[in-house]
Image (tube, rainbow, N blue to C red):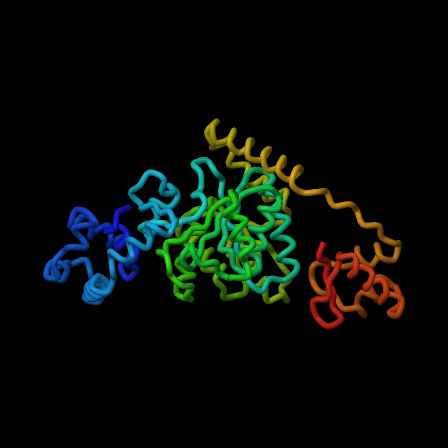
Length: 381
Protein backbone atom coordinates (compact mmCIF):
# COMPACT_ATOMS: atom_id res chain seq x y z
CA UNK A 1 0.00 0.00 0.00
CA UNK A 2 1.29 3.48 -0.84
CA UNK A 3 0.26 6.78 0.69
CA UNK A 4 -2.66 7.17 -1.71
CA UNK A 5 -3.98 3.76 -0.77
CA UNK A 6 -3.61 4.84 2.84
CA UNK A 7 -5.77 7.85 2.08
CA UNK A 8 -8.46 5.59 0.56
CA UNK A 9 -8.29 3.44 3.71
CA UNK A 10 -8.90 6.48 5.90
CA UNK A 11 -12.15 7.48 4.20
CA UNK A 12 -15.27 5.64 5.39
CA UNK A 13 -18.18 7.71 4.03
CA UNK A 14 -17.95 5.87 0.71
CA UNK A 15 -18.36 2.08 0.77
CA UNK A 16 -16.18 -0.54 -0.88
CA UNK A 17 -18.33 -0.85 -4.01
CA UNK A 18 -18.10 2.85 -4.75
CA UNK A 19 -14.37 2.88 -3.97
CA UNK A 20 -14.00 0.18 -6.62
CA UNK A 21 -15.91 2.39 -9.06
CA UNK A 22 -13.63 5.32 -8.23
CA UNK A 23 -10.56 3.19 -8.93
CA UNK A 24 -12.06 1.85 -12.15
CA UNK A 25 -13.02 5.34 -13.29
CA UNK A 26 -9.72 7.10 -12.51
CA UNK A 27 -7.32 4.14 -12.83
CA UNK A 28 -5.56 4.06 -9.44
CA UNK A 29 -5.50 5.55 -5.92
CA UNK A 30 -3.05 8.30 -6.92
CA UNK A 31 -5.41 9.57 -9.61
CA UNK A 32 -8.40 9.36 -7.28
CA UNK A 33 -6.62 11.49 -4.70
CA UNK A 34 -5.47 14.04 -7.29
CA UNK A 35 -8.75 14.24 -9.21
CA UNK A 36 -10.04 17.74 -9.80
CA UNK A 37 -13.03 18.94 -7.81
CA UNK A 38 -15.00 19.31 -11.06
CA UNK A 39 -14.25 15.69 -11.97
CA UNK A 40 -15.49 14.46 -8.59
CA UNK A 41 -18.67 16.52 -8.87
CA UNK A 42 -19.43 15.01 -12.28
CA UNK A 43 -19.45 11.42 -10.98
CA UNK A 44 -22.92 9.90 -11.36
CA UNK A 45 -22.34 6.98 -8.95
CA UNK A 46 -21.68 9.23 -5.94
CA UNK A 47 -24.44 11.13 -4.17
CA UNK A 48 -24.04 14.86 -3.61
CA UNK A 49 -23.45 14.13 0.07
CA UNK A 50 -20.71 11.60 -0.75
CA UNK A 51 -19.00 14.02 -3.15
CA UNK A 52 -18.98 16.77 -0.55
CA UNK A 53 -17.76 14.38 2.14
CA UNK A 54 -14.93 13.12 -0.07
CA UNK A 55 -13.75 16.62 -0.97
CA UNK A 56 -13.90 17.81 2.65
CA UNK A 57 -12.00 14.76 3.89
CA UNK A 58 -9.30 15.16 1.24
CA UNK A 59 -8.84 18.81 2.13
CA UNK A 60 -8.66 18.15 5.87
CA UNK A 61 -6.52 14.99 5.73
CA UNK A 62 -2.78 15.77 6.24
CA UNK A 63 -1.60 13.02 3.90
CA UNK A 64 2.18 13.38 4.21
CA UNK A 65 2.04 13.72 8.00
CA UNK A 66 -0.34 10.76 8.46
CA UNK A 67 1.61 8.58 6.04
CA UNK A 68 4.88 9.32 7.83
CA UNK A 69 3.21 8.52 11.14
CA UNK A 70 1.97 5.21 9.77
CA UNK A 71 5.25 3.99 8.26
CA UNK A 72 7.03 4.63 11.57
CA UNK A 73 4.31 3.03 13.70
CA UNK A 74 5.37 -0.60 13.25
CA UNK A 75 1.83 -1.44 12.17
CA UNK A 76 1.48 -3.65 9.10
CA UNK A 77 -1.17 -3.30 6.40
CA UNK A 78 -2.59 -5.18 3.45
CA UNK A 79 -4.89 -3.79 0.75
CA UNK A 80 -7.64 -5.78 -0.93
CA UNK A 81 -5.65 -6.08 -4.17
CA UNK A 82 -2.59 -7.55 -2.44
CA UNK A 83 -1.67 -11.23 -2.27
CA UNK A 84 -1.91 -11.84 1.48
CA UNK A 85 -5.29 -10.13 1.95
CA UNK A 86 -7.58 -12.79 3.52
CA UNK A 87 -9.36 -14.61 0.69
CA UNK A 88 -12.51 -15.08 2.77
CA UNK A 89 -13.02 -11.30 2.76
CA UNK A 90 -12.18 -10.51 -0.88
CA UNK A 91 -15.59 -11.28 -2.34
CA UNK A 92 -17.70 -9.62 0.34
CA UNK A 93 -19.70 -6.72 -1.05
CA UNK A 94 -18.59 -4.54 1.86
CA UNK A 95 -15.05 -5.88 2.24
CA UNK A 96 -12.61 -3.51 3.98
CA UNK A 97 -10.44 -1.61 1.49
CA UNK A 98 -7.47 -2.57 3.64
CA UNK A 99 -6.60 -4.18 6.95
CA UNK A 100 -4.13 -2.92 9.55
CA UNK A 101 -2.64 -5.49 11.88
CA UNK A 102 -0.11 -6.35 14.54
CA UNK A 103 1.12 -9.91 14.85
CA UNK A 104 -0.13 -12.18 12.09
CA UNK A 105 -2.92 -12.41 9.56
CA UNK A 106 -4.76 -15.75 9.25
CA UNK A 107 -2.76 -18.38 7.44
CA UNK A 108 -3.92 -19.97 4.18
CA UNK A 109 -5.27 -23.24 5.62
CA UNK A 110 -6.15 -22.00 9.11
CA UNK A 111 -9.70 -22.93 10.07
CA UNK A 112 -11.31 -19.98 11.80
CA UNK A 113 -14.39 -20.09 14.03
CA UNK A 114 -15.98 -16.89 15.35
CA UNK A 115 -17.19 -16.88 18.95
CA UNK A 116 -19.20 -13.87 20.09
CA UNK A 117 -21.58 -13.03 22.89
CA UNK A 118 -22.70 -10.77 25.68
CA UNK A 119 -20.34 -8.41 27.45
CA UNK A 120 -22.16 -8.94 30.74
CA UNK A 121 -21.93 -12.69 30.41
CA UNK A 122 -23.51 -15.06 32.88
CA UNK A 123 -21.40 -17.74 34.54
CA UNK A 124 -23.14 -20.29 32.33
CA UNK A 125 -22.25 -18.43 29.14
CA UNK A 126 -18.67 -17.81 30.21
CA UNK A 127 -17.95 -21.39 31.28
CA UNK A 128 -19.55 -22.91 28.18
CA UNK A 129 -17.60 -20.51 25.96
CA UNK A 130 -14.33 -21.42 27.64
CA UNK A 131 -14.97 -25.15 27.38
CA UNK A 132 -15.98 -24.99 23.72
CA UNK A 133 -13.10 -22.67 22.78
CA UNK A 134 -10.60 -25.03 24.41
CA UNK A 135 -12.13 -28.09 22.78
CA UNK A 136 -12.10 -26.55 19.30
CA UNK A 137 -8.58 -25.20 19.79
CA UNK A 138 -7.23 -28.59 20.86
CA UNK A 139 -8.69 -30.00 17.66
CA UNK A 140 -6.95 -27.56 15.34
CA UNK A 141 -9.36 -24.63 15.06
CA UNK A 142 -8.55 -20.96 15.66
CA UNK A 143 -10.92 -18.59 17.48
CA UNK A 144 -11.83 -15.17 16.06
CA UNK A 145 -13.58 -12.56 18.19
CA UNK A 146 -13.59 -8.92 19.23
CA UNK A 147 -11.63 -9.03 22.52
CA UNK A 148 -14.62 -7.41 24.25
CA UNK A 149 -15.54 -7.99 27.86
CA UNK A 150 -17.49 -11.15 28.59
CA UNK A 151 -17.86 -13.92 26.03
CA UNK A 152 -15.41 -12.58 23.43
CA UNK A 153 -12.37 -12.29 25.68
CA UNK A 154 -13.29 -15.42 27.68
CA UNK A 155 -13.30 -17.46 24.45
CA UNK A 156 -10.02 -16.00 23.25
CA UNK A 157 -8.25 -16.40 26.59
CA UNK A 158 -9.41 -20.02 26.73
CA UNK A 159 -8.02 -20.64 23.23
CA UNK A 160 -4.62 -19.35 24.34
CA UNK A 161 -4.78 -21.38 27.54
CA UNK A 162 -5.34 -24.47 25.40
CA UNK A 163 -2.14 -23.73 23.49
CA UNK A 164 -3.77 -22.28 20.39
CA UNK A 165 -4.06 -19.04 18.45
CA UNK A 166 -6.67 -16.31 18.20
CA UNK A 167 -7.40 -13.19 16.17
CA UNK A 168 -8.96 -10.09 17.71
CA UNK A 169 -10.81 -7.69 15.40
CA UNK A 170 -11.08 -4.24 16.97
CA UNK A 171 -13.46 -1.30 16.59
CA UNK A 172 -10.49 1.06 16.90
CA UNK A 173 -6.96 1.05 15.55
CA UNK A 174 -4.66 -1.82 16.47
CA UNK A 175 -2.30 0.44 18.40
CA UNK A 176 -5.03 0.99 20.99
CA UNK A 177 -5.93 -1.82 23.40
CA UNK A 178 -9.69 -1.62 23.93
CA UNK A 179 -10.93 -2.36 26.47
CA UNK A 180 -7.79 -1.51 28.43
CA UNK A 181 -8.66 -4.18 31.00
CA UNK A 182 -7.76 -6.76 28.34
CA UNK A 183 -4.15 -5.60 27.97
CA UNK A 184 -2.83 -8.98 29.17
CA UNK A 185 -4.84 -10.79 26.48
CA UNK A 186 -3.75 -8.20 23.88
CA UNK A 187 -0.08 -8.78 24.73
CA UNK A 188 -0.46 -12.59 24.82
CA UNK A 189 -1.93 -12.56 21.32
CA UNK A 190 0.99 -10.48 20.08
CA UNK A 191 3.47 -12.86 21.71
CA UNK A 192 3.32 -15.13 18.67
CA UNK A 193 -0.23 -16.42 19.23
CA UNK A 194 -2.27 -14.74 16.50
CA UNK A 195 -3.00 -11.17 15.52
CA UNK A 196 -4.80 -7.91 16.27
CA UNK A 197 -6.72 -6.72 13.20
CA UNK A 198 -8.68 -3.60 12.26
CA UNK A 199 -9.78 -1.68 9.19
CA UNK A 200 -9.17 1.59 11.04
CA UNK A 201 -5.87 3.45 10.56
CA UNK A 202 -3.50 4.22 13.46
CA UNK A 203 -4.81 6.62 16.07
CA UNK A 204 -8.50 5.81 15.51
CA UNK A 205 -10.21 5.93 18.91
CA UNK A 206 -12.94 3.43 19.87
CA UNK A 207 -16.34 4.89 18.98
CA UNK A 208 -19.73 3.20 19.13
CA UNK A 209 -20.25 3.66 15.37
CA UNK A 210 -17.12 1.57 14.66
CA UNK A 211 -18.23 -1.63 16.36
CA UNK A 212 -21.12 -2.83 14.16
CA UNK A 213 -18.95 -2.61 10.99
CA UNK A 214 -16.09 -4.53 12.62
CA UNK A 215 -18.51 -7.42 13.26
CA UNK A 216 -18.70 -8.11 9.51
CA UNK A 217 -14.95 -8.75 9.56
CA UNK A 218 -15.26 -11.19 12.47
CA UNK A 219 -17.88 -13.22 10.62
CA UNK A 220 -16.25 -12.70 7.22
CA UNK A 221 -12.94 -14.20 8.35
CA UNK A 222 -14.67 -17.25 9.84
CA UNK A 223 -16.25 -20.32 8.33
CA UNK A 224 -18.81 -20.59 11.18
CA UNK A 225 -20.15 -18.17 13.79
CA UNK A 226 -20.98 -19.33 17.32
CA UNK A 227 -23.25 -16.99 19.29
CA UNK A 228 -22.78 -18.03 22.89
CA UNK A 229 -25.04 -15.57 24.73
CA UNK A 230 -27.05 -12.54 23.63
CA UNK A 231 -29.89 -10.33 24.70
CA UNK A 232 -32.81 -9.75 22.38
CA UNK A 233 -31.02 -6.74 20.87
CA UNK A 234 -27.25 -6.97 20.94
CA UNK A 235 -24.06 -6.59 18.92
CA UNK A 236 -23.77 -10.38 18.76
CA UNK A 237 -26.97 -10.54 16.74
CA UNK A 238 -25.53 -7.93 14.37
CA UNK A 239 -22.65 -10.34 13.81
CA UNK A 240 -25.18 -13.11 13.15
CA UNK A 241 -26.94 -10.90 10.58
CA UNK A 242 -23.65 -10.27 8.79
CA UNK A 243 -22.92 -14.01 8.89
CA UNK A 244 -26.23 -14.78 7.18
CA UNK A 245 -25.57 -12.19 4.49
CA UNK A 246 -22.13 -13.70 3.93
CA UNK A 247 -23.44 -17.26 3.72
CA UNK A 248 -21.85 -18.40 6.98
CA UNK A 249 -23.54 -21.00 9.18
CA UNK A 250 -24.59 -19.88 12.66
CA UNK A 251 -24.70 -21.95 15.83
CA UNK A 252 -26.26 -20.73 19.07
CA UNK A 253 -26.00 -21.88 22.67
CA UNK A 254 -29.49 -22.47 24.11
CA UNK A 255 -30.42 -21.15 27.53
CA UNK A 256 -33.35 -20.96 29.90
CA UNK A 257 -36.32 -19.04 28.50
CA UNK A 258 -36.42 -16.94 31.67
CA UNK A 259 -32.82 -15.76 31.24
CA UNK A 260 -32.51 -12.39 29.43
CA UNK A 261 -28.98 -13.29 28.33
CA UNK A 262 -30.37 -16.22 26.32
CA UNK A 263 -33.24 -14.42 24.60
CA UNK A 264 -31.12 -13.66 21.54
CA UNK A 265 -29.60 -17.13 21.20
CA UNK A 266 -32.93 -18.89 21.72
CA UNK A 267 -34.44 -16.63 19.03
CA UNK A 268 -31.64 -17.59 16.63
CA UNK A 269 -32.35 -21.27 17.24
CA UNK A 270 -36.05 -20.67 16.60
CA UNK A 271 -35.09 -19.02 13.31
CA UNK A 272 -33.03 -22.03 12.24
CA UNK A 273 -29.54 -21.65 13.71
CA UNK A 274 -27.69 -24.79 14.67
CA UNK A 275 -28.01 -25.80 18.32
CA UNK A 276 -24.89 -26.20 20.41
CA UNK A 277 -25.88 -29.24 22.48
CA UNK A 278 -22.37 -30.30 23.43
CA UNK A 279 -18.80 -29.47 22.52
CA UNK A 280 -18.34 -32.98 21.13
CA UNK A 281 -21.38 -32.75 18.85
CA UNK A 282 -20.36 -29.28 17.66
CA UNK A 283 -16.88 -30.52 16.79
CA UNK A 284 -18.35 -33.45 14.89
CA UNK A 285 -20.48 -31.03 12.83
CA UNK A 286 -17.47 -28.88 12.04
CA UNK A 287 -15.28 -31.84 11.12
CA UNK A 288 -17.86 -33.08 8.61
CA UNK A 289 -16.40 -30.41 6.34
CA UNK A 290 -13.19 -32.43 6.21
CA UNK A 291 -14.64 -34.41 3.30
CA UNK A 292 -14.40 -31.25 1.18
CA UNK A 293 -10.90 -30.28 2.30
CA UNK A 294 -7.82 -30.85 0.21
CA UNK A 295 -5.21 -33.27 1.50
CA UNK A 296 -2.99 -30.30 2.37
CA UNK A 297 -5.76 -28.66 4.41
CA UNK A 298 -6.61 -31.89 6.23
CA UNK A 299 -2.97 -32.43 7.12
CA UNK A 300 -2.70 -28.84 8.38
CA UNK A 301 -5.67 -29.39 10.71
CA UNK A 302 -4.15 -32.60 12.09
CA UNK A 303 -0.77 -30.93 12.64
CA UNK A 304 -2.32 -27.93 14.43
CA UNK A 305 -4.37 -30.21 16.67
CA UNK A 306 -1.22 -32.13 17.61
CA UNK A 307 0.75 -28.91 18.19
CA UNK A 308 -1.95 -27.42 20.39
CA UNK A 309 -2.23 -30.60 22.41
CA UNK A 310 1.54 -30.70 22.89
CA UNK A 311 1.68 -27.01 23.89
CA UNK A 312 -1.08 -27.59 26.42
CA UNK A 313 0.79 -30.54 27.93
CA UNK A 314 4.06 -28.63 28.18
CA UNK A 315 2.80 -25.21 29.23
CA UNK A 316 0.02 -26.06 31.66
CA UNK A 317 0.30 -28.21 34.74
CA UNK A 318 -2.65 -30.56 35.12
CA UNK A 319 -5.01 -29.51 37.85
CA UNK A 320 -5.22 -32.07 40.62
CA UNK A 321 -8.63 -33.18 41.78
CA UNK A 322 -9.65 -31.27 44.86
CA UNK A 323 -10.71 -33.65 47.64
CA UNK A 324 -14.31 -33.12 48.77
CA UNK A 325 -16.28 -34.46 51.68
CA UNK A 326 -19.54 -36.30 51.01
CA UNK A 327 -21.58 -33.18 51.87
CA UNK A 328 -19.37 -30.96 49.73
CA UNK A 329 -19.74 -33.34 46.79
CA UNK A 330 -23.53 -33.43 47.25
CA UNK A 331 -23.81 -29.64 47.28
CA UNK A 332 -21.37 -29.14 44.41
CA UNK A 333 -23.18 -31.70 42.22
CA UNK A 334 -26.50 -29.96 42.92
CA UNK A 335 -25.19 -26.65 41.60
CA UNK A 336 -24.97 -25.33 38.06
CA UNK A 337 -23.58 -22.33 36.22
CA UNK A 338 -26.82 -20.48 36.92
CA UNK A 339 -27.11 -18.78 40.35
CA UNK A 340 -28.97 -20.76 42.99
CA UNK A 341 -30.04 -19.49 46.40
CA UNK A 342 -28.93 -21.08 49.65
CA UNK A 343 -32.49 -21.98 50.68
CA UNK A 344 -33.20 -23.59 47.32
CA UNK A 345 -29.92 -25.49 47.55
CA UNK A 346 -30.84 -26.67 51.03
CA UNK A 347 -34.19 -27.97 49.77
CA UNK A 348 -32.57 -29.61 46.74
CA UNK A 349 -29.90 -31.45 48.74
CA UNK A 350 -32.04 -32.03 51.87
CA UNK A 351 -29.19 -30.64 53.96
CA UNK A 352 -30.51 -28.37 56.75
CA UNK A 353 -30.00 -24.65 56.12
CA UNK A 354 -27.62 -24.14 59.07
CA UNK A 355 -25.56 -27.19 58.06
CA UNK A 356 -25.22 -26.17 54.42
CA UNK A 357 -23.69 -22.76 55.13
CA UNK A 358 -20.23 -24.03 56.18
CA UNK A 359 -20.24 -26.42 53.21
CA UNK A 360 -20.85 -23.51 50.81
CA UNK A 361 -18.11 -21.45 52.44
CA UNK A 362 -15.70 -24.38 52.15
CA UNK A 363 -16.48 -24.84 48.44
CA UNK A 364 -15.97 -21.11 47.87
CA UNK A 365 -12.59 -21.20 49.65
CA UNK A 366 -11.54 -24.08 47.41
CA UNK A 367 -12.33 -21.96 44.35
CA UNK A 368 -15.12 -24.20 43.10
CA UNK A 369 -18.09 -21.86 43.54
CA UNK A 370 -18.61 -18.10 43.88
CA UNK A 371 -21.30 -15.76 45.18
CA UNK A 372 -22.74 -13.95 42.16
CA UNK A 373 -25.66 -12.25 43.89
CA UNK A 374 -26.59 -11.86 47.56
CA UNK A 375 -26.77 -15.44 48.94
CA UNK A 376 -26.80 -16.90 45.40
CA UNK A 377 -23.94 -19.06 44.18
CA UNK A 378 -22.75 -20.64 40.92
CA UNK A 379 -20.10 -23.14 39.94
CA UNK A 380 -16.96 -21.57 38.56
CA UNK A 381 -15.07 -24.83 37.85
